Length: 389
Image (cartoon, rainbow, N blue to C red; front, side, top):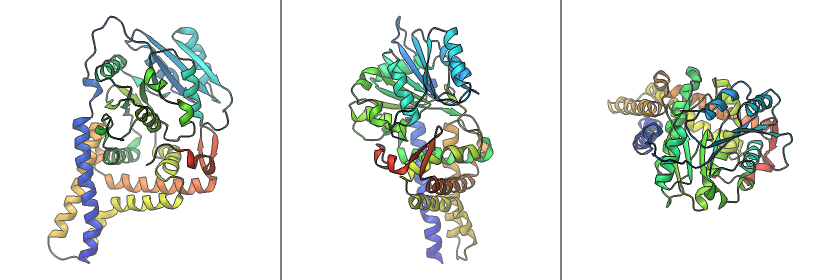
């Protein structure tokens, strides 16, 4: 029984110690956008902001207005209505009439062999003319000086691709428990400070904010190379880096804000494609296996019920639980997440495991993923993913 206890608790202890170390290093080595200086220059390069949107009428106007109120003197906004069935396109047209810096592009049909969002980004680039391209989500809100800080940093560091981890609004207590454990887990999996090292293959990005130097983008095959890549943000970073571009990732706390998901149920529904296509590689068996490990990491404190002798099991269990909570607290603080959900990482891990199993069941039932109203079968996508997790 002592050996069983050692296995059940020992592995989580090692993993949470590693996660804490990676999270602390991430906090120390990933630059905070809010602390960056702004260049004093007479002229600024033109930035084209491409915003793809599908059925985003509830928040797209506020997001587009935040882009237009940037204290940046040379900006173009290309808003792409991707086959919306609500008033998204109408809102874009009205804002375009009010402000000549904004133009609206309407995608009526989806070309065969393209994911909707990738096609919308491609169409937006075709209508842009800036020296820099900023790809932003339709619910992303930027601080008034965000663009000037990012351009100043990218020029100083000779960066071709700059992504920002956004400040994500609360998704409720249960949703936030999931976000917190995911943040810490991603720090361990990605080692995000390595993204800016041109000698490492490490990649990472968030679709909320991806700033790309046009000359660097021009060296790549463009979005046609990524047209069926579900992990489009990581894919864009991969494409730029493998074609000689320098990449970086910033902490966007207080500078780039998004609503993302409002509840646990919305997370589970909209993340089905990510779990099935990206982490599970379209294999229900692989996803269920990953879910089992995730549930184990959430439920290992139940090992306290095992009949073991001595004080070492209690000390070992307490250490593992402490490391688990501490890694979540550090990650949550770094990402400006609520504190209370960070105290219940086990809940977040069990819920994450449930989401993964749900993704496997749904993916198996529908035979792929559903995204922006289109069903993409596994046979079409499986061998077209550039990002390998």
